[in-house]
Length: 332
Image 1 (cartoon, rainbow, N blue to C red):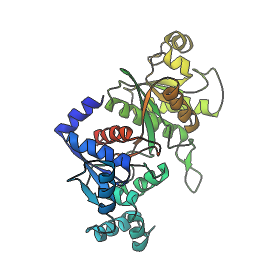
Image 2: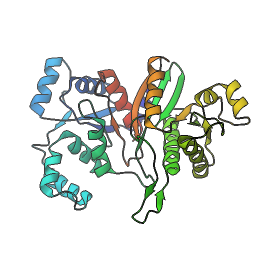
Image 3: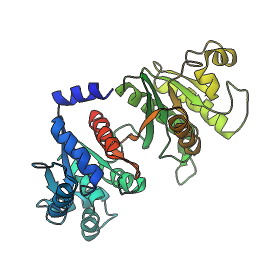
Image 4: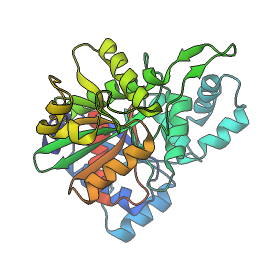
């Protein structure tokens, strides 16, 4: 999987911003990326601190760009751009203060076209990585929300799971008069469509199961209705997509169960892309696959943003940083 992505990046190299340039895991990954020559890291931080830490740890970052918000020559232009993007929600002084931090500064580098993508979260929380992205890069045209998916790999087997990290649950959005402007089913359907698109980037031909504790009307409940209704919406959004639901996990992956409970479904028993009705179910589900099923889990991969910005686990290691950098750039 990674060989294919690296090959594509060699033909079209990208710049990637690392918001925590001083972190040894970031520095080790940057060293590997520099040697690979297919992706150019930009490290955010004080050059003296970053260089000293790299030297201390024995990593070669010679020649890589290190940008410090405190001395960045284009800061005034960046502040002005951010003020305009925030549309009166933040003053120039507030924007300058935010841009002194690596997460906001790095995100603005992407927004202003200095780099194609960003990877953060080695020390920042998910919220601190996603918030600047939502405020500055924003959702791409046609997208209504940001979601996430994990790609799970075990040998030659690859699966996609969403949303396991961003959307806690799905409720209708309403205007001041109480009219529904975006239904919960539309939101979950969008997660399904976006996760299927991400799956394709990783060479998965998506067969999407909208998961539930019910299969094809066998049970009742709010999340059952949500998964059922979202399936219908997703089919309208992309009639070519192989998607069915609602269904239980065994019906999604075991043909003898799926075709018994959901006869004739092109997905039941053969699913490789799984959409959960709540973050609780999704987060538990992918971690079970990772810890008990022996899958390597890559993510969370953020979906719906106007540029690829991804989040690391604060418990990540350098190899995970390296691989997530490749994934993030491949999405650019």
